[in-house]
Length: 443
Image 1: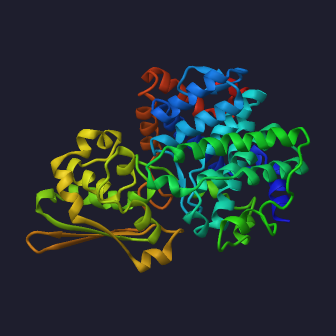
Image 2: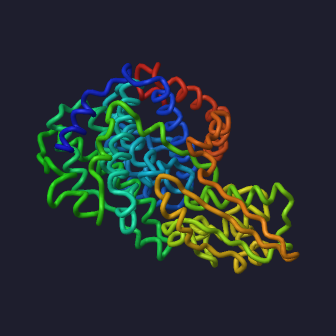
Image 3: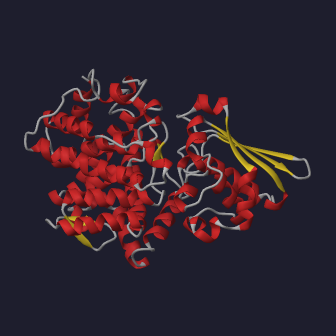
């Protein structure tokens, strides 16, 4: 059975058996998560969640990242998941359309701190979570993604897998943990119509629900044993088409975490190919005043989610390829400051928005979701046309960011919340996670 096979994989995974590149990637994912969580904890969604949790009280056994205090592990998983997903800088796995770190590492850290396990055990949980969450997402994609936010749904399975590994559950208990995770997995895309905060809640709830599932399983709480493959299970209920073979193909031999992508811009990943191309035009000296039309051609999901030509809020701008491309052309970069009100209302940017369009490209649609193709056709007022294309946005494994770039990204994000000295100290600890005798020493 599919669910049972995944449970066996989780229980048998050992840090020492992992290829060196998998060990290193797990550490890099943790570093990237830490920067996103520290910066995201300053934003209103995280502050609201922390206020609610503080009113509830409870044990102080797991770190509330960015708040310099601890709280109950379930609350910590919830809050840290929200924080890590809020500024749109957290990682992404392309084929599954999943942001794995926010739900999975948030659950893993909370469980690891409560249990007091070593850095190696924590990393075992991270790898197990990535493998399970990504594989379930890949099996359900892209049909699942139309209604369901994969980070909220498949992220719940990943969080359960990570925490089950850290808690040392045996295979039967892991099946129960996955079963309880699947029946809680949720996250609907309707929030996008309102630009609401539900997207951040999805990641936090995935983390806390996955962790709760493992705690319950440890106590003998039973759940569906075929939650994935059953007649009324996850795949049948949430995807009009799916491929269960993808969930276990080469499981334990090939590691999905190595396919992970890192974000260099704080916007929806579906905008990143277009941003890369717009920045290329900027570097080549194209002046915004000389542009007559910007036509982005890409896959249907991007047309649907990031085609907005009139964003009114920073969140809407993060989900607007016309805005992200225009800002990149005007400012020559796309960081958090480019989503502030002054940049949103820039006359140069506002002039480019009605000149921009996002259209469907059949070739891009056929390649998605394994490849996220974007073409940019820039028509200038002198009649000339510049054509750019990318198959892999910056940060993809095929077009990677360097370790130095990712460390600088982390330091920039983290230093907005803690001192540069503290950020550098934490950087050193994360890079040496496998040597930590106790994960509580990390924070």
